[in-house]
Amino acid sequence: MEGLIVAIGMPVIIITIISVVMVIGALVITSGVKYPKVQFYKIDQKWEHGPLLLSATEANPVAPGYHGHGHDDLIGGSASGKW
Image 1 (cartoon, rainbow, N blue to C red):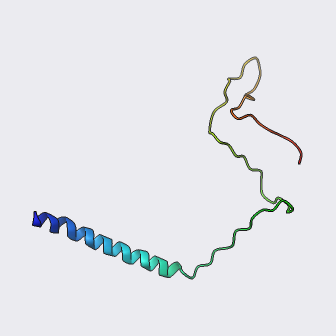
Image 2 (image 1 turned 180 degrees about the horizontal axis):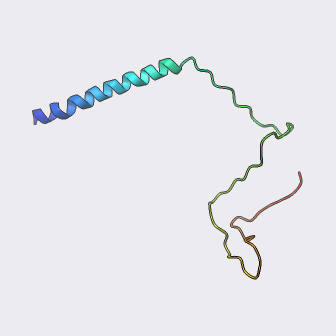
């Protein structure tokens, strides 16, 4: 049993110590890195990005196309308008 503890325990301890040293080294190296501040959108600003499509599901159309109609019957419906 003691041989098994040494055979398994020593590599685990060595790997743990190496991992902790690497994490501390990474924290020290990246501590001076400054990331750009996130600019939040406000309603009075001009929208300068492309259109966004947000969906709650990755579902396919509910009904198949029939009688020459397309796939307009989507889960969740759709909306359009001018703001």
